[in-house]
Each structure stands twice: as C-alpha cells, then as structure tokens.
Image (cartoon, rainbow, N blue to C red; front, side, top):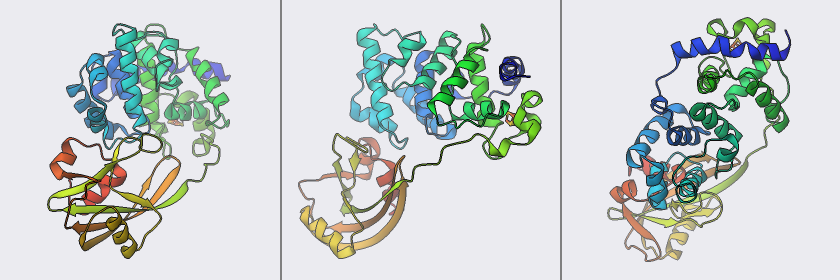
Length: 350
Ligand code: SF4
C-alpha cells in the first residue's frame, strides 16, 4: 500500500472512533469561529488542562469578538496572566479590532483570509477553516505530524517546513466532504490521546491496521526531529520588596521578552545579598530586613532564567515604583509566572 492509500484510509477509520471517544471540551460545545480561534490560540504551547479554566473565564468576560476588540489591553493581559507567550493575547486583540473595524464584525471564512489575521499561522487557519467553515484544509501541528510520521513510517524531520507542507497537502487531499471539521478534530484527538509521544496506545488505535510504524515496531524512533538549539542561560536577581502590606512592581519595557507586562524589580546577574541591598537602596528603598532568599528557574522558548530572589522588608515606598497589595496584584496587574512564583514561594499569593 503506498503512502496516499494509507492517508486515504484515515477518515473512514478515525471518524467513527472520534464520535465515540471525543473528549467533552468547553470549546467543542459549538463551532463559532470566535470560540475555535480563541481555543486554538490558547492551546499553542499550552496543555488542554491548563487552558480549560482560562478559556471559560475569558469567554465569560469577553463573550464576543466585539467585546474582545473593545477591552483595555491591561485587562486583556490580566485575563491571560500565567498562560505565557503574551504576544498571543496582543495578536488576538489586534485581529479582533481588524475584524470589527474592517469586516463589520464578520469573521473571515476562507483559509487565506484567516491566515492573514495577526498571530494566525497555517495550523490555526486550517483548524478554523475546517472546523468552522467545512473547508478541506488540514490543521497540522506537532500531534498530527507525529501520527502521520508513524502511519507512513516517514523519517523526514518534522521541524522542516518542507515536511510539514508535504504532509499537510497530502492530508488535505483526503479530507472527507461534509466532515472536514470532525476529521480535523479526530486527527488532533488521536495525536493527543492515543498516538502519544512516549507510549503510543497502538492496541486501541483505530489506525493500527494500516500504520507502518506499528507493523515494523518503529514507533519509538518516530517522529524524527532536528537537534534542539541550546537555550541561552541567564542569571537574574529579583527583589521582592515589601512595605507593610504592599509589594513593589514596575512595568517592563514595550519591546522584547514579556514586553509591557509588570515585573518585580530585577537585574542581570546573580547578585550577593549585600549587592541586592545596594540595588534596593539605589531604587530609593530603605531596607529593614532581608528575610528570605529564594531560588527558582523559569524557562522560556530560547532562554532559561536562573533566578535568585531576595525578599526584603522595607521602611518606605520609593516613589519610582508602583506599590500594590496582594488584592491589587490579583485583580489589576498582569504579573508573569516568572515573577509570580516568588510571591507564591514567599507565601504572598495563592
Ligand atoms: S498504531 Fe500506534 S503508532 Fe500507529 S498511529 Fe496508532 S498509536 Fe500511533
């Protein structure tokens, strides 16, 4: 059986299985483009379990594209707090404003138009076009690439755009008329629940009969990836400055990593306690006591921050910083996880 013939078997094998086994996820209650778009953007680099609550909170507060277009950026970032990759939220905002102002609130319905929205790549465009508008366009993410590599026993590295493109075209060619959305979701579901990276559940897989990797026991070797680029390691020193019931925060610059979000004052390098107290003095803070030293690592896509944080009790609230209570921080300021972990570690947040 050639590769195309294996792909052609997929819809018939997967659709009945999907109808029986699909997980009940909040964004599967309907096929509104807004809901599918939002969920797909949230699910990029983020686990389904982590997204559930965020998605529900987000839709409860911003139930329409118009509401998203109008929301203040600070509020939007607060709703996104903890999900990471904040440019996703900013792009959602920009795209919603485009849809409202340039398209009268009407979500684009072709793959090409969807792909032109800010923050939307081929995978997300394929997912929306097929799930919401029944277009025969594959949505090929890491999960789907793994399934396809194994079914065709294809050793082409999946990080290469060429591999992705070829698999995507081949898969789009077998999309079943009238069931495009279900087929996209079935492929995603198979990758997420059955064809797992480490221990694929081949004995309960609907594609096992025609999966070459299963026949040749090569599942563990697939998919092939190019060697990963080493992450850059940065040492940082963070100051958790507390005066009475308030903590010092400041806004990050509008460019670069975590741009425009809030942060605890922090510096490059692993500073000693004395040096950290010196930096606090430089910020205009009179320290009363250095009460804790905390160590944490936070990993971004290309950078690893190895951080030491000094929890310092202060006598005064220096003017150059914003001083916020725990309740303020909970409600009004988007503080990324890289800093929030220290509030939690110091018992100053849940
Ligand atoms: S048979 Fe196994 S390796 Fe093949 S697609 Fe199914 S789960 Fe993946």
